[in-house]
Length: 276
Length: 315
Image (spheres, one colour):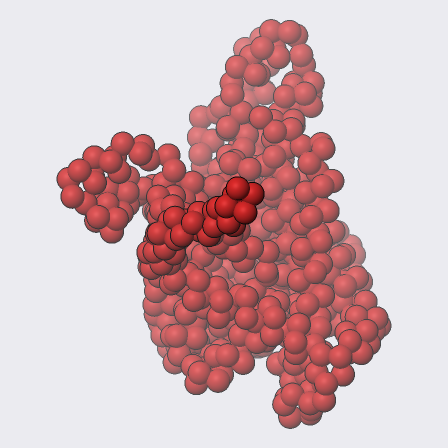
């Protein structure tokens, strides 16, 4: 009897988990299904819930009809440049805040943190004018330069640098290491986990950007994947399968990255939450 | 004697200053050296955070001519007229509703999923992946997915409605349903993030706390109320602050799903800024709203910090 009840409890738990998991994943499942349907059944009633006759050709059509490869390349270049730039600038700044003594250190640190209080949307109009005046519209500079520094990254790296024992600095100084060599050969290798978390988090943020790329790019050759994808919103119902195929293709890189770097992502996302 | 003392006293601060001079110079030197490390970030922040913030305030003082050029100085008049206008109040109200429809449901769902996924069961990691799967979708991907689900003629939501004998709804063009539909998309989009952060918070709670609570004979509801919830409150606080600020900055899903319509029913504040600045080229009016948004987010963070500080349990 006891055993029976335990099994029933297990079954119930799994049933609840499966039901909720199914609901969460359902929009993704339907997107994949729709991306594989022929255009005749995409408009059928009742809607098809399983691709009995999968049209793998849809993905090829999506790549032919929409310059998806170019969009994804643009997003990749943009995100990579932003991540590398952010790691360099924030490691340098965090080093100064953690290891150097100088007048105005607290003030400058507060100044850095105050940038977190300004939502990007507030400064979007003047920033657009700046980019326009620089003649940077439709360029990688416009997509990347404004995001090459990060206060959050600087803060998290500084917090980590402070946990590295001072004795290491002293020992390195005896070995004749200057600040830059100490940073590059001692501090950074000891901070790989934090740097990885920052990189994954920064990449996700850059890849998902919407408002800014929408404003500063017009030509197909410079559009990011988010904006290119959004431009498919007005297509006819009977080509939804192609639209959904394009959606699947553009979601793939992020999916792969998250599977590979799950741990780093969780670290990056929760960094602010757990150390309140 | 008095006179000699006086001159010595007068000379003292001067000598002290002279003695401090090398120290000062060393300080400036040190600052100069530190700046080498700080300048890359400072340049970016100055050009793209601080300058535009002041520029936005400044632009608010000027009218904009129909060609998008800066017009006459009108001082605070433009702030007064825009901030008290019907349309600004409307977009503020829509933004508030949007936050209400997205933040509390998002946290409750994320908490429920995290509690379920925190059980020790074989194969639980499969469900964790399922629950966190929406972090892999961007705002554009999620919006296109839901655009298909919400489609009035072939969308599955209407299929289910018809199946249970209800009339079809044109979700995104319906005055009452457009905002809830956009909100549902947003809750789904952010669910993975909320789930991941809350689950990490749950896992950070020391096992001993649960054990001692059980030793004292606490039931599972009592354990949740007296152990889990207080220990989790910093995480929930973080999720609610970040969630609210995200809601106030939302733009992409509205731009893709509804274009602010029908009849401005989904025109949140950022969408309104975008429309004024980049459809009507009225930079002045857009800047006033941007400054309003800035103050709002600032105030919101401060109020939330104050309000929650007292209830949140910190270790």
